[in-house]
Length: 455
Image (cartoon, rainbow, N blue to C red; front, top):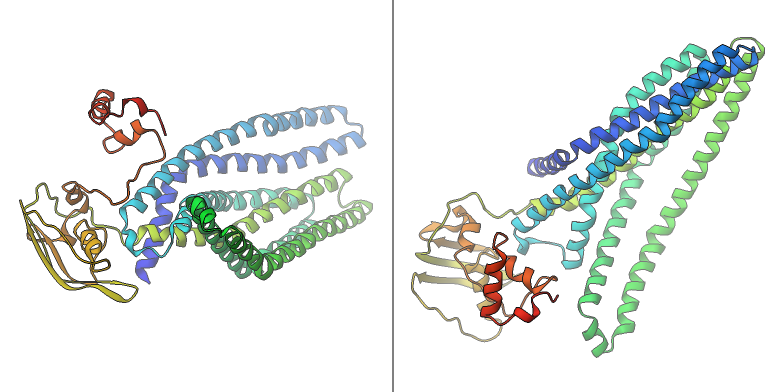
């Protein structure tokens, strides 16, 4: 449990390290926007009172102030927001690279996800984590500052009216807290469905020709349809109904609060407790109050998404291969002693021992399923045995830096593999520092000059 908590903190810390600058810029423009909207409410109220009382100088002064506020809101804030978007995109690429590195550093044999589900997690989970963290962190800073400034302005007008307005809006803000468990549940179900759907899509795109050859198109389409209709019937329909009811209630409640505020404000005007301009300011303030408490709702609603995205990414942080051990620069010997490997609870290798020394030429033979490929995977450190030990140069492999060990291995797969890019880039991808001349030499050596730019 403690390891899980520590790992989740590590995931959040890595994300925060990448997103700290976007969070600062995002918080800045949201804070300026919120303060200016509240400030404009005060200006509108004073201008209205000045116009009613025929105080033209005061009215013109407030028009100038309002024009300046509108200029900042319409011109300056969008520029800051654009800057925030650019910084966020740049930092997102850094975070994506970090997640991909974590994925490549972990032991893939222990994955519970299939290929399609892994692709979905790699694409969706880091993006969800960044956006929810950006929203939560910026809102947590903006909310208290905005609320304090709003209370300062409303209590200047009328304290009882201010209390009624803020209490009414706060009651609406309790809705997300009451529904937090439901939100978390449906968010988790939605992520599971999307991962399964991506898995089906991957199967189809990778095996399209075979699907047509064995004539199972209808079965495959039915499989995808069944997945969607089952999700829609059991979860999505209820979730959409639930969202619609909450949305309708919020709209009704917002209108109700404004009507109540206008009625109470009109009564106070008749009793000369406030001015018409101050009531107009309160109407502007109620929109700001609803927006601020809406930010609280965003925080509550985004917490389940952040939690689920961290849990999905955690698989890439678990079972990390050892890249901090003893560096191996040359091969002397490899020894497997009493190793046992299970596939689906069945032993494929059972108490197998192998010794290979420098200069040995070893050939593995045997019938299908006897464990030849499994033993090869053990040797290249693709999998780990259930029990037994493996030593390299007399050193336990768990104490060896796996990256340095793999640099000593040349591996030819049974199935050719190329990245989906040009032949030139496939040649250079193993050595990113290799120059164009070196790549051309390799291409000439294997007769590939004419197809270098083909994909």
